[in-house]
Image (cartoon, rainbow, N blue to C red; front, side, top):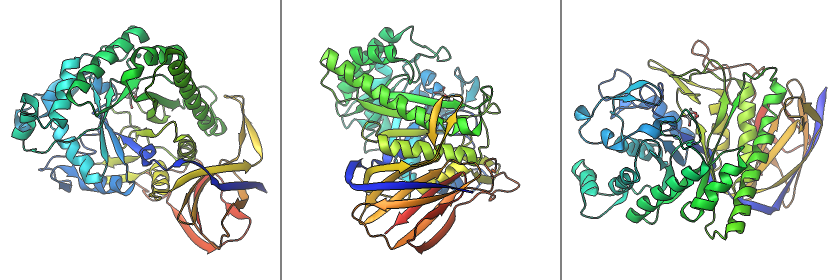
Length: 481
Ligand code: AHR
């Protein structure tokens, strides 16, 4: 049996031009993400470039993240940046209050900036608004961005960087509402005023920087207070969503229904932002930075948070990326948690590296460099997700139109059936299709070190004909011209 569906692409209805920051990444000083995953040091037997692991460097480059968030996560709420600059052998070894580990400080601001430059990404630094101070955050902005003859700018020069790093995007704290955070806020009021103080200090040093304040995906009151108090100072509200897969009775059907809920939540957060701006006369435009998102399995326990995800998580990832394309007017920034070894896209073991099916999905989505996200409609059979009480179409689609080509991303959620898809495109008489997809042979297929290429990207090219057949549990890129 197959499921039959129709996908309509309206190339005249432009949602927005593609903002590649939606395919961003997040790295944290946590487990083996930075140490062992990104940084091995120059003397390591693992092939490296100036201390950066080469295999990981190349794999990350291949998914072209245009933005990378650092240094946390929870780690940020107790990190004192000054410990991580200057001669490496003189940097203090500190106890990391967030994760209970030893932080060598070998990888600090300079190393991070060099790494993002090597992979061609923009930096996005989260300052310590937990047990740090506004003054410390302002000094970090000065170290990174100032051209003046002042102490911290000169410190950067002394450490070998005459030119500023020009870090445009800064986060003020991480999940400050969470009791697990070092220096959490008692409530949104307190957090709002703390954000104002930090923003004020940081912008006095560099008025051009853009700021991300802490928000919550399910707490409207928090978001209202934050916008009401700090609205004129900030540019983005940070939202995090993890889908915890250990909830009783969560099925594959529930997992792949969640992106619908995520899309609704993000639209609701934006609605709250807009209502609050209107009510309090806030002129500043504020959008969403969805700067931590992923699935989270019970095996991913602190302090390593390691897991190996499978095809079902790739399907989830494709669906979230489709949603992010559709949302990119209001959610122009999203960073996946996390890139290497922690809830990872990429896993390393000594000198070996493994690419998860989720990584392969990022590879598909980041193929398109520029274009317009255009409106799509889908007619598809549905099922009901019990966990979410949601009516879920088996087929989900999103499209980018660029230079007379349509890059059509279609996910077939069905766990067993092929999908026969009839494609209708306005303003294009299609003649050929390049079809790339990630499906594996079952929803539980994964790449493991013993069998690293079990799931791959399949590729075919054919003359345009209808219907196009898509395998079960598949994430597809159809380049139609
Ligand atoms: O990504 C792992 C952790 O999850 C981050 O440190 C924190 O922000 C979130 O709770």
